Amino acid sequence: MDHSEFNDDVDGLHRGDYAGLPIVGLRPPGAPMPAAGEAAWRVSVETYDAEETFEEHFARFAETVDTTEVRALIVGGWEDAYENDSSVPVRLLVENAPRFPALRSLFLGAMPAEECEISWIQQSDVTPLLEAFPLLERLEVRGGSGLALRPVGHDRLRMLRLESGGLPAEVVRAVGDSELPALEYLELWLGVSEYGGDVAVTDMEAVLSGARLPALRHLGLQDSEIQDQVAAAVAAAPVVDRLESLALSMGTLTDTGAEALLSGRSLAHLKRLDLHHHFLSDAMQRRLREAFAGTGVELDLSGRERPDGTRRYVAVSE
Image 1 (cartoon, one colour):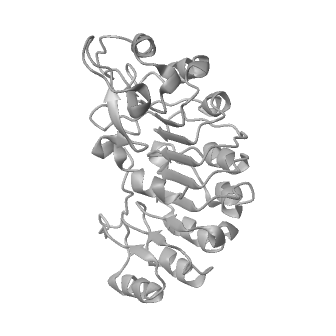
Image 2 (cartoon, one colour):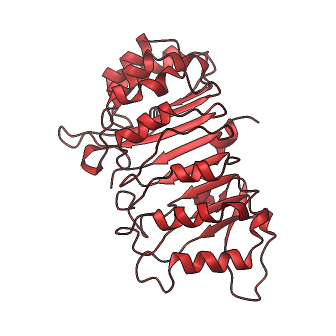
């Protein structure tokens, strides 16, 4: 399977689909529902003034839907997600893992801003999900506050996306120290220090070496306030040679970082280079377009931003 399916699908939630399936929630008793394997099921309660707990809602879901056929699951909100962490949803999924033998795609914390700002979402250790679902192919998590991951081995995971306004450094190190031989698509929103994003370039060394990621074809190190440093590290990284697409978007990339990309390892073999939401000068944008002209690289330079005074900002923080 082509990893580009993930590139095409990362915005699916906005379209009402996930993992190639329409998103469906529990419907009133007696209302028609699709077959369990023909939908991406959203299990969610109100984050403010919830009328039932997430545990109660999950129990109703498991009683109503044939969980043995569920292929894709979206965990949206849980009650007071800005105060209560995701340990209850994680525990329920782990305890009920045998009831979900067909589950291949899982999104934890899929809450829009009106339900809970990304920096407010309280996460927890998600390692048990990978341990409990050895056949899982896709794991996505939104929210970096309290997020934890321990180095883990997983033979089937093909896609890992961590969306945050501030990603803890230990999570990035754990990704690099994990044995993920099937992982094709890795996307990390690094965020800002104000919201817990304390990642330094040294924390990415294992990821950038690619030693434990032999199948990696897409790498996204995005939304960073140190995007120039990230770009410089990527420009010299061994993993780049095997990539088909690279995203250094959503951050504070300036001419300094772009210069590093131009003078580093060749990127002409890429199918796509995503630099959208940047702070590049007109001259540097011209240089980039000229450098990749005729190579077949799809270059995304959309979303040029202007500094707020001397301050440069990432696309997603709070």
